[in-house]
Image (cartoon, rainbow, N blue to C red):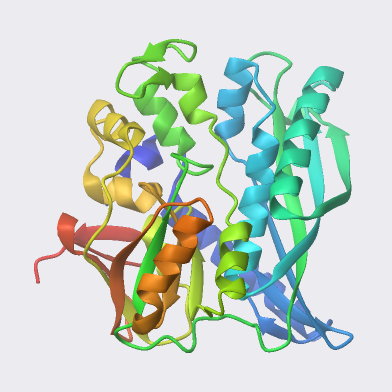
Amino acid sequence: MSTKHYARGGVDTDGADRALSRLLLELAPTQAYGPPMDVGVGHFAAVIQVGGVQLALTTDGVGTKLLVAQLAARYDTVGIDCVAMNVNDLICVGARPVAMLDYIAVEQADPEVFAALGRGLAEGARQAGISIVGGETAQVGEMLKGANEGSALDLVGMAVGYVPEGGLLDGSTIQPGDAVIGIESNGVHSNGHTLARSALLHRFKLDGYVEDLGTTLADELLKPTYIYVAQVEALAAAGIRPRALAHITGDGLLNLRRVEAPVGFEITDLPEPPAVFGLIERLGEVDRAEMRAVFNMGVGFCAVVADGDAARTIDVLKASGRAAWRIGHAVADPERRVWLRGDRLVGQSKHFVPDDG
């Protein structure tokens, strides 16, 4: 299986899927207890009806990127990641993010660490245009193990937004031939850090300059996840309505499969991945199929738009401050496969495999 290095590092995506399936089986009856769901499990965010408003909800955390922050004793950017991982999922269902809660679990409560986390959360909120209206902290040292003694922590958020009338996006209107527009990432973002650390930390010191990267390893790995709220708002202001939006996180471009339409995607023109991914691939001896299934590889977000809107979409995204490219198109395919033509790979479910077709 193509995720062998990730599994050796302790991230078993197949096992996680089996465990999640069991959890969802137990939770399914609860859907009858509350308001109706317009978008449910399997999409980037849930959408429920509350008082005539479509309310979008999501939750996510920073993951093992926090171990890098602990090793580097730098906590001022991971709050941005926490906001990004939540609001970027909300906008995929057409929601306007409005507020967020945070949960910080620590081995020991350090005022300076909390201040740095707060600065990052505040900056992420500024970029996303949301309020952080509350949260919870817990000292649970007996439950946590960090990179250094006393430094263990976990940072998680839960965000809420609303869907403007008629604005729900679930990918059901995608047509074969629609263009897939990729928007640049800021490097590794907040997925795949277990694999990144195993590939790089045996070769480089975190505070050491890495010539291939043009910066220190800590600076590279702690680059905060891009927040794409402004880009989606720019498209709306230009009168461009995407048929689907996808946050490219763990599973890479397989996230495009979270759509309702019976389509797959031919990805034909991917940009060259940033240097950090080449280092991980080479030094970790990771094959390209696994790299594509774990990392964003330079494309952090995608918009699926009508073919006639493709060129203008790219222009609007570039004007908003993010590089963007037409990377492929939708095709009729009830199996919802993703073909990476340049890498000769095809993906379904959680994995890419060689494409012999």
